[in-house]
Structure formats: C-alpha cells, structure tokens
Length: 215
Image (cartoon, rainbow, N blue to C red; front, side):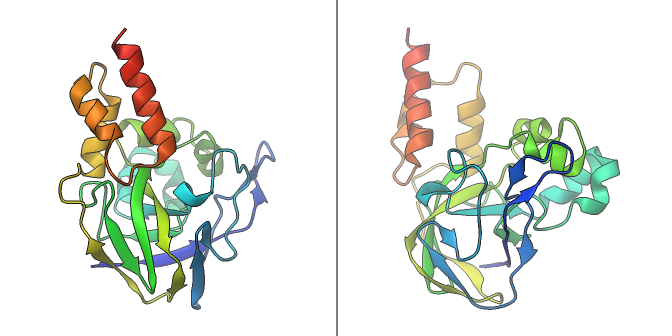
C-alpha cells in the first residue's frame, strides 16, 4: 500500500521559450474521475508524445526530489511533489518496487504499470537548470506511466494497493537498466519486449533495437 498525493494541470507557457507545457500541476482535494486517458481536468500540450491511453497517468517517486535538490541546489525550493508534472506523488514506491505489468487499485480504478517516463528538455527550462533531464535519465529517476484498465473515481485520501502482481516480470528499474545497456543480452532484451502489459511504443523501440544489434 502506498499513500499518494494527486495532481492535475492546465497547459501553460514555459518561462523562457513560451512553449506550451502541461508540467505545471495543482493539488487535487476533491474526488476526481479517472478515465482511459487520465484524470478529469488534466491536460497535455503535445499530444504526439504526451497523454493517451498508455501515458494516462504519471507517477513520480517523491524520494527522488532530495537527490535532485542535492545535485541542483539552485532549484531546490522548486523541487517538491507535483513539480515534475506527475499526477501521482508517493514516498512509498520507486522504480525498484513495481514490476512491468503490475496492476494496482487506486480508488475504484485499476491501473497498470506500462513504461518509464522519458524526461525531456522542458524539465530543464521549468526548473532553470541545464542538465536536469539528462541527470534524471542517466540515474533512472524517471518515474513511470500507467494505463487505466478500469475507470473509476479517486479520492485524495485513497492509497495505491497492489491488485495483481506481475511476479515473473522485471522491476521497472531492472527493465530500464537492461534497456540502457550498451551491449545488452539480446535474448533478455527480446524477452523484455514480450513482457505482458508493456506499452506498445516502448515494445516497438526494444524490438527495433534488437534487430539493429543483430546486424
């Protein structure tokens, strides 16, 4: 079980470029509907790479913020739960604690771990720190996306409860570590691509990499 905080946001402009982003979130204090594309009232700026059924909900482990603050001291006051654009913040889980394909219950909804977040340049601009997105990527401090298997209603005091463990699947940290290896074991990488519950976009990228490395 994991205690959570919930966040949603409207599209806003980044402070320097003025580019639109959905990274700015506000706390949710009332019951909220969770549909196949995410929480009611939550919006993304670039639907080509954000949102959709396999990026419906983003969770960011709150324990990562201390690591980021230690590395990027000037941004420390801004590094608080919700500031990475997540919909769910929790100090009770990180990438070592969930497996690809795990199904968890949140309120009356069921959600499934399906892929890690791929941090982008907007994080650097949002916090005014060059290199933060790269640091997040290199140190596997990404958080992850869920797909919604069963829509429902979530209350701010609800907790994440493991509903169906993908006990044979790798943890998200193990999966990301394998994916990032310079010369990964191709059988293991192929097996990762076939993990039940994996997001199709990530599955396709893994298969393409396997094909490339086999040449």
